[in-house]
Amino acid sequence: MNKVILLGNLTKNPELRPVGNTQVCKLGLAVNRKFKDKDGNLQEEVCFIDINTWGATATFCEKYLKKGMPLLVEGRLKFESWEKDGKTNSRHTITAERVELLGFKGKDQENEVLAVRDLSLRDLSQRDTSQRDSSQRVKTQREVMNPNDYVDFSTDDNLPF
Image (cartoon, rainbow, N blue to C red):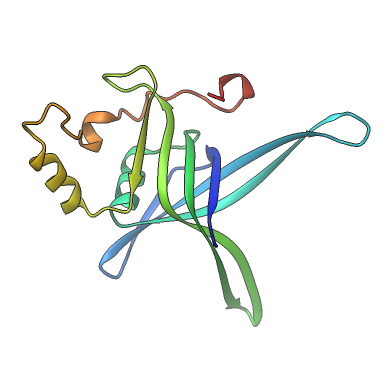
């Protein structure tokens, strides 16, 4: 099984670029870990991770996310290798299958969480159209989210668990 779940903050603004007939968005995520060393001193370790999102998720991420926002990313680990100047380089990246923006304040709820899965824009619009008259209408991403309304999870005091 190849499954990765990460909670962290964006380290830079998303970068969107075309790849064939679709879009890919590169995200940088910082994941913190606090622990006590053998002497009892509190230590902090930061892991910087490259994440790629594809399709409608990539377009959404580029449009609405910005540096510092807290995210939960679910995806799979991918090993990449390339050759440059006669030297072989390699790294692990995450291919995101799901991205959740954590802690922003939505229009209708105090602390709303937005989950974006790999859906095409056509799928999103069909869902919205089919449920337009329903009392449980699916909100479009634009209606749900204002990118300036989010809670800072950079300290443990603000974590929801």
